[in-house]
Length: 239
Image 1 (cartoon, rainbow, N blue to C red):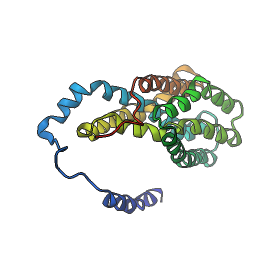
Image 2 (cartoon, rainbow, N blue to C red):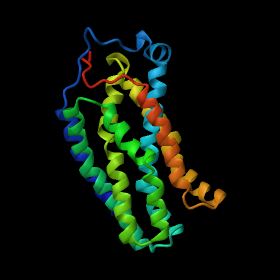
Image 3 (cartoon, one colour):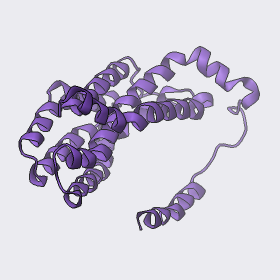
Image 4 (cartoon, rainbow, N blue to C red):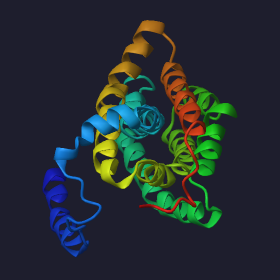
């Protein structure tokens, strides 16, 4: 049934794609013959690496706090499967509601970096991650886990919408799609795709139930350093 419901969203995607205007080849069309990849890796390599690292913090947070949390609740905290799945549903709902609101805030503040640095900085630097995981282990009930996970995701969501805008606005037009595709795909595949595996392995290897929090915190700190080294793009005139 979940797969059937997932297929139902396809017509919406097709409708949106048909309604979007696309660029026609013209003065700004460079084509593959201009060596897009060559230019990307020679003139924009620093930006490409920084965007890849910036996305890393977000994608690891997403995979651990949203997708891994039900597994963590079952195998580490001992919750029944029927209750632990509610954690994943609640997590997705929080992100669905908060991301558009924080995206609006980013536009109002005219800043892409500030919501990322503040939201994820609070998530890690104020040590929200570790107290939340400690409380979940101290009180392994759905009544404790759901609000704590939701609170962490509220601060995580602060930078989600502006992160995608920052990605798009950091590359010039003729390498934008290629640059975003490579940075996002590499980060999600390498770091996001392995996040649950790494978190599970860390719990077993260290014997610490706080290991997933430490892994998320490390990745987020690295991504914050990357974001701080990117230029602010909110007022940038895109080509």
